[in-house]
Image 1 (cartoon, rainbow, N blue to C red):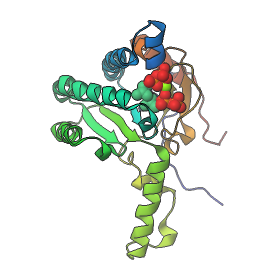
Image 2: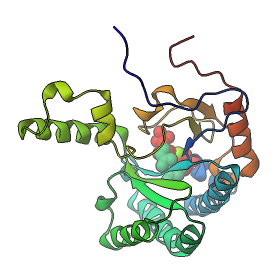
Image 3: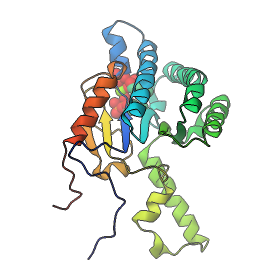
Image 4: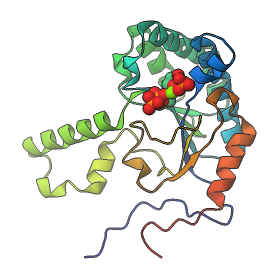
Length: 246
Ligand code: IPE
Ligand code: IPE
Ligand code: MG
């Protein structure tokens, strides 16, 4: 049976540049622990790394950068830490939105951020609105994101459309599911990076990562910098992607 044509992911090799890079920013807590500091100090340093790395991604010419900032499982953390993370999110939007607007960055959010407190939802909505007309590099922040929840929501939406007679059940194919995902308007995911030496995806972009190249760095997220990103991108450029073919 011939397979349907897939979205044209970036070919690897020959120094190819990934169009879409996702990062699981992990290791803030361990970074703080190594310094006998409270975990919040690690998260604060993590925000600095976000600034560095988003700038570096723009300089490298990466079209879309997706950052895992808060997972749907991170609600399991103590209330105090969740509060600290929310506080940092407020500070980040307040301090960095002007630069994003100026730098023509298109901000996107994936995940169910409406579960956050009302003031954060309002801040995020304002940030999205202010960067909507931009047409430069895309910065995607994953907030209360989990792949399983995203796929369950896609299944619910498609089932409802079928019940309402808007689509035929036979029209529910891979492309139809992809259109329901939070990432439907983003380039295909080329490269997934995880810092801090952990080798798992932790419910991040499971569908989208089907053929992404994976890069695991030992570096703790607060220490991740321009050179570390460049190294991950260079490693992508040396890979040969086959997508099941030869
Ligand atoms: C990642 O760092 C940041 C978030 C999950 C928000 P961690 O807080 O998971 O740091 P470690 O894994 O405990 O070192
Ligand atoms: C993944 O890191 C989530 C984010 C980076 C936001 P975690 O630290 O939450 O993942 P696990 O619990 O080690 O799998
Ligand atoms: Mg962690």
